[in-house]
Each structure stands twice: as C-alpha cells, then as structure tokens.
Length: 412
Image 1 (tube, rainbow, N blue to C red):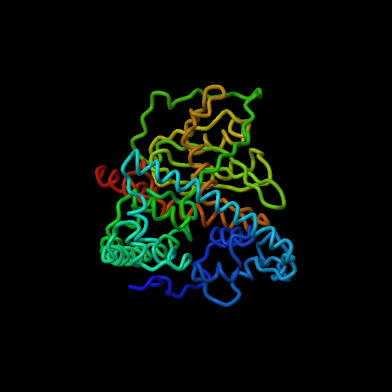
Image 2: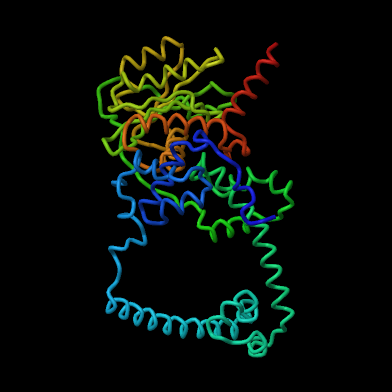
C-alpha cells in the first residue's frame, strides 16, 4: 500500500471542528508550515480552505498571505550574511562531527554497541552522495557486506510503507481530539491495526509518533477561581466515607476560566462522578451564582434517575448562594462541600477541567461565539468518543447509559 493511502477520502466542512481549525491556524501562524503545506499535510479539500480559516479565526492580518510566508522575498540574505552564516554552520558541523566520533568510539569500546555497523545500512545512500564514496568502499571500511545493506534497506522501506498508514489514522482521530494521549490513541487504533495486519507494540507506537512529531506535551497553568472567604453557610463533606456505585448518585461541580482574544470567560461544569460524563455546562463572562446555576439546571434536565443524589463542590461563594442551594433543594439533591482549601477533595471536577482545557480548548478563539461552539463540540466529543483509563477505556456516555439500563432491568 502506498504512503498516501487513507488520506484521499473526501471530507466536507462538517468534518473539521473548531478545535481542529484553531490547531491548524496555530501551526501556520507560528511558522511551522505555510497554509498550503498545512492543507496538503492534513488532506484538507479546496484550494484556499486554510486561508479562509486564517482570515476568519486567525490573530494576524491575512489579507496579504505572502507577508507571512517562510520564503518571503523581502527577507533575503545579503551575500555577506550568507557567507558568514555558512562559515558558522561549517565550523559547528566540524565540531559536532568530532564530538560524535569520540562518543561513538567510547560507546563501541565500553558497551560493545557497534553503532557504525547498525547505522551504515540505513544511512549509506546519503553518506555516499555527500562524500562521493562507493558502496563497496563504504562496506570495506566498516566490515559489512553489500547484501546486508540491501536487505536492511529493503526491511526499512517495507516497514516505513507499513507505518505510513498510521499517520492518516492518527490525524483523523486528532481532528476531533487534538491532544488525546498516546495510550488512548493506541487503544482506539487496535482493531484497525489488526484488520490491516500491522504489528506494532505500545513503545514502538510511542517511537513512531515521536518521529512524526505527534507526541503531546503537557501544559500546566493555574488560576484561582474559588472565593471561600464569605459568611454564607458551608455544607459538610459527605464524600469522605462515601463510595460511588452508580451514575447520577454524585455530581461534582467546578468553575474554570477560558480566555478569548476579547476577554476572560468562565466555564461552569457539572460532571457525574461515576461515569465521568459532563451532565451540564455554561459559559459566562462572570462567576455570578445566577450564571453558574445554569450548568446545574442543564444537568437536572438531562437527569434520568430519581434515586437519591449528592452534589459536591468547593466552598465557593457561587455554590453557597441561595439561588444555587434553592435549585438543589428543588430537585431534592443533597449538598456536599470540601473542607477548607483542599482542592484534592474535589479532584474529579478538577481533572475534568484539566482534560477539557489541555486536550480540547488549547487554541485561543477570537470571540465568545467561537468559544461557545468549540466548547459544545469538545464536550460532545469528550462524552461520546474519548476513552477513559478509569473506565477501562470506555467512553463516559457508554458507561452512563449501560449502567443505568442494567440497574433499571434489575429493578423490573
């Protein structure tokens, strides 16, 4: 199968969600590739689709695309600058070669690795082109037969063709889940890999993604959104000795901030503690209790069970406010809160916040309406497509529905 197989499937605009568009825009505006290269790399249909995205959602002025091109004719070097750069690069290469040769000799002598014998079959073509050395001469220098090099090259090419089929499959998943971890990717691709007869272990899969620059680097940020220094009544923590056994038994809530280029917005989330399903959410421009309670109302609207329920949150002013507590009382939900300032007592809610922000809401939107759409698409993908390690690689919605159905069948 050729290297481009799997990437020729025609897609419509509905296949590109807001998260994917913003990720492509970020790569182009950072200079990692041109918009034409991005269009080709991701198999995006249309001649100027990415350019339209850049003009609509980008942070730069794309009315004159050539100004942002990596090959901008207005930024050419002078001859003197070119000579200085080449002299510097030549000096650096000589020093690097000397250090590498010393390192290779030490590794061969101390550990018996035989680096040259292992590397030469893979690099012989490039070396001979650069140094104008014949293959026979190269083999004689390192004590390797020509047949060994041909066999190693054939194996490498066959394996490269085989692994080339992985990239379109990975990118197809990353369209919806841009920062999905490698272990979850490997799990989702298992059935397809078996059908295609591709044998690759988890560690080799990590290595392949690393070679294609597809590994995800974690991001760490923290902004305080909880004000627990107030006079309102704070409820005791009911989850210290409580073990969750079914969906819609315990809901956990939290607030996190999300920025657009206009301002800072606040996202309120209500999550089921058993299935990890996001039951309700609301984006607002402030953290007023009247805004935060809208996420709870959505969760109650989606509630399917009338069994006793606990609502757990931090001791923030919004959750202690009368408007929020009245909504809990209206639906006969028992309030529970963390003790003091220990964020680990609401760890599940914090974890869901982190997943959304670090895996889905990773690019900055221009407007609140763009962010609303991105959040809606991200939560739908999180609930229905993203596997959870804690759920044995099942999705939150699958666990939620199946468990409730099993409970209902036992009752009847």
